[in-house]
Length: 99
Image 1: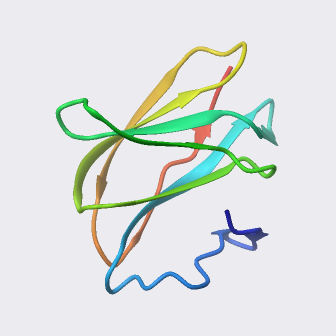
Image 2: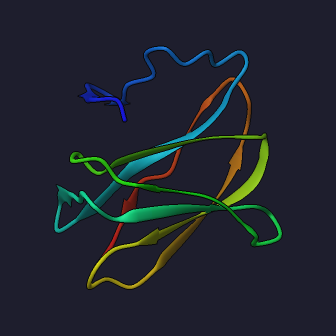
């Protein structure tokens, strides 16, 4: 994971002309949540990938353009699903708050 920068997660080293990026920050109680797991599900609900959040609650996936579900699992919290239509050449951001 890249370190946090003003305005969001750093995209240093990411070629947006070639990549479709889905990224965001998971938080709880207005603070970033480290150690949560974020899953990427395709448009049919099939599991594609999973990453843990960084110490600053950040996650990032590289995916194909299209409709995706970001599923967040955190200890002591309910599972949170967020849908996103990701496009190539853009930062597709999904920030998640768990309770």
